[in-house]
Length: 254
Ligand code: F6P
Image 1 (cartoon, rainbow, N blue to C red):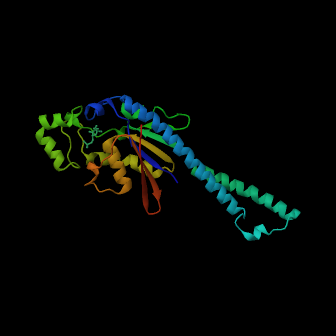
Image 2 (spheres, helix red, strand yellow):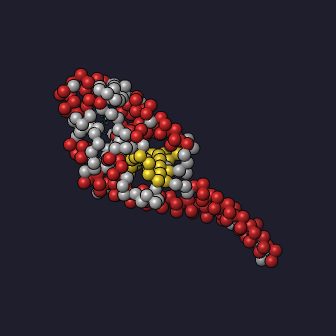
């Protein structure tokens, strides 16, 4: 039982002015979201720990015969008392190994851009392992970095139109410019690692990255993926279930 949480960074100075790419810091609204996000995840984490604790208690109760009528009618004799004592020792050992398996670390992965690292600043580093991963950086818009969509449409109308016609394969012009198809490749290692580890992770990342990650976990076709509505200040949680993942969404309400 683990959860993969995905969120975009808090609102940045560039979001406020409609500029794409760049490496801006958080705007005041974004800072409020960052603080609320840490409180929200802390709360989810302790609720989850309580659920696990209850589950473990039920397991221990069940394993120690609490559910069987045979046990209820057991006579109070010295020998049965001894045998109950020795069994409860065994069961508490079992219970502690369950704890180890289901209550592991919680990691926070950000990109290497300021807006995601600042969004993770409110987490207590003694309780969360925080990693900054370059592959989680936003899609790189090449020559169009730092421009608004209106400026791109005016200065590079052919590029603007080409992107609208095939957003998944369209690659931004200029050195390092990327397409969604490039981003999918760039994220492969991150996805392999996410599949490998067994504990919960919060990914604090960007719009194109969140689209790519969610489309992977929720099986959304690449034809829809680049247009998914993923507003700022929402948390998406993918919970693995036997026949696929279950998605929950929370919106920050300031
Ligand atoms: O506007 C925020 C942003 O994260 C940009 O940095 C990025 O280029 C863009 O969103 C990705 O969204 P789209 O692919 O819809 O342009």
